[in-house]
Amino acid sequence: MSTLESSLLESELREAQRVANVIRQRMAYDVMGRDEVIELALISLLSGGHMLLEDYPGSGKTTLAKSLGESISLSTQGESDAASTALIKAPFRRVQFTPDMLPSDITGVMVFDGQRNDFYFRPGPVFSFVLLVDEINRTSPKVQSAMLECMAEGQVTVDNQTYQLDKLFFVIATQNPLDSVGTYPLPVAQLDRFLFKVKMDHIDRTSELEVLNAWGIPRERQDLEMVNRDEVISAREAIRHQVFIHESVKSCLVDFAAALRSDKRCLQGVSTRSLVQAIPALQARALLCDRDYVSSDDISYLAPYIFGHRLTVIPGVRDVNALISDALQGPLEELSRSTTRA
Image 1 (tube, helix red, strand yellow):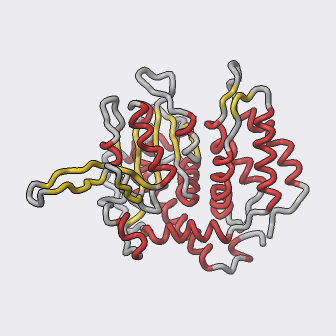
Image 2: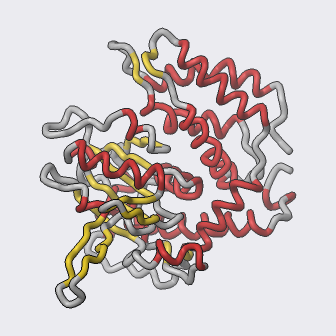
Image 3: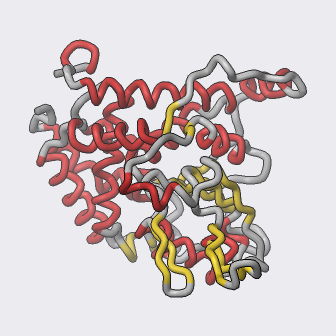
């Protein structure tokens, strides 16, 4: 089975690919010159991970996240999802982190209703499908930690009451480069909650000219298709259960992690959590490459984005990607000797 077109009979995977293509088309229409970042955002969404973007202001991060959020519409839910979706007011929400923020500004707060003489819960922006957390390292560690439960457990706890977030809950966070004034570096525990960390460079000359030429001209998207929340959830399930991942791929990941942990240049290696998160990401990337199985190419491509931000290295080591490449060399050679197809 080499391609979806020639060998895949599972209608669920074909539908998952259609969902991915619809979202990709809408994002490519709104965000010019960012095809690779769009691809990584799609992989992150379809694998249930979260994404951290490091960039300077004006690079298009808000447009990218908004375009993704507005590609997904609300839909009728089953009984098991009714509680979480009832609190959602919009598919996309944006939060600007500032030094004076409080955790309740993110999670929500109990508000007193004078007419009913009782308190009710007013949900925060985490009750959405896609949440853009802008400049996450501009706020205090107390507010940063408020995101941990949301991202790891899919829930928030306010006044000893737990509220479930939607299954689709997806965070795109941005941070300023760490040498910027007034930043609070994210702790390792929170960095480990992000599936990807991506550095957004400036777009190429042609794309930048295209942005300038399109400025001020109304652009309509009525003819572009949308997907609903249920379709994205179904796509996740199809990818998880129907894109084949060989045991040798899992062995490659474990051997790679062991090589990193034993490397003298590495003070702290990657966590087991990162290896678990890598599995659905590799499956999602395989689907986007028209395959129903994970290959060594998927590992080579995604490894720097999945593991780079999780490493703590000795002083003087500047190229983390080279460290990852060295640790991958042996496991990938071993993987190449076996087949990764079903």
